[in-house]
Image (cartoon, rainbow, N blue to C red; front, side, top):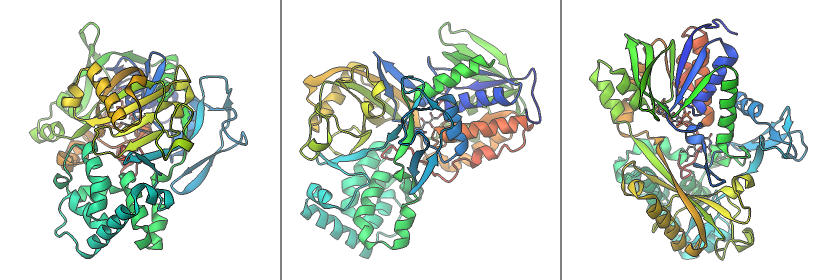
Length: 536
Ligand SMILES: Cc1cc2nc3c(=O)[nH]c(=O)nc-3n(C[C@H](O)[C@H](O)[C@H](O)COP(=O)(O)OP(=O)(O)OC[C@H]3O[C@@H](n4cnc5c(N)ncnc54)[C@H](O)[C@@H]3O)c2cc1C
């Protein structure tokens, strides 16, 4: 144990997602502080949970287990070892990312027959545009030219050339930013609709600075732009591109989906003396000055609220909720945090008997038409679907009947909008019709379906976010409060970032409040690899 063992002390933890559970397990491993985890949902895992629908498991978004942090990679393998036989040599797993390869050498393998293991998966994701599959990242090869058509390719090239000669000035909006860099035609073909679909805001209303900050996350479009523009680019540019995260090709994946990792962690937390209270929502925080003294927890089953005194409070709940509960004296803090933007997310799980092969993918699909991709970016302007997950290809164990195809149709939306509010049955039908419209399935092949809504899936960096530093300063002033995680920090965190932030919070608790700012240094350079268009 480090500098304080914290015997008899209690840490209340809001949320049993990756951040909350990592904090709880690390506290148990490295101190005598007891973590009490309160989770509003009926299961653990947060956004990284696995939803089990009649034996078919859904991963909300498709979670790659990959980190540049060796600590995280080891941590995951300590919970779920890599399955025996997943590597060619049984010795090293070659993870390639950021244009580099790194050998992950598992110290222990799990039996292949066991469910409690991780698989090594090879990423395949393509773009579906004009009812055809395009390679991702897009390559300027014969197949792309065939798919686009020579005339369209020429038009894009001309439009790109035009944009290089005549710049939009001043460059105020994201539209200006993108047109200036990629030309109007390419912008309209691949950027405009998709960006607006993902973020729900017209590109003219998003600032150019935001584009400059975010464009490195717009990988589909980036890939396309790169391919089209590459003949005009310098060597240095190309080298830099190779260091970008979209080149990740291999990743770890729990056999039963991402939630399996967090279910295992929850077992360990409970076994080591922590407690996890499902369906318990933190609804209030008591404080004395700038120290949290207790949380108020509502049992969702009975509605009763109880007061839980605590010495530390680790919060992964949305910043907006936390600040409201703290009742800051400065009204600005409330105003800013209440207006922090989010994007919400819905997935329709569709179980289908078979899919239609398009002419240019027939040779890559299986007998029942299932494409080989983990996920497919849908870049078709006549449908609202953003991405399609093929769960069979993440792990065959996610699917109850291997003869069926288990799909996730992902929609970016806003809590309360028309999509979000659609009654489940209607939404499933709507989603199936969309897939039929783009010729991927026949609706009569749909066997079953379900819907999962994910509020605040994406903390967004526009609007009031520009004043977030004030909220952060207010939260940081508390002596025993640790906001961590994705919504907890309003940061575009992947699992590993959330875990690293949680681990930093535990370090700081153990070191009597020292080193708190390290929490905010994680993922501070927007260097993320989760993909919502890829965008997220
Ligand atoms: C579409 C999509 C794809 C993604 N892909 C990847 C990927 O490939 N790889 C990767 O590593 N990451 C990926 N991520 C990111 C990953 O899901 C998150 O980084 C991770 O789940 C964040 O963990 P967290 O604990 O910070 O927050 P969350 O997962 O949001 O967990 C927070 C928990 O707190 C609970 N909670 C909230 N308020 C309260 C309250 N008042 N009281 C009690 N409980 C409360 C919530 O119910 C939730 O369970 C993806 C995310 C999305 C949306």
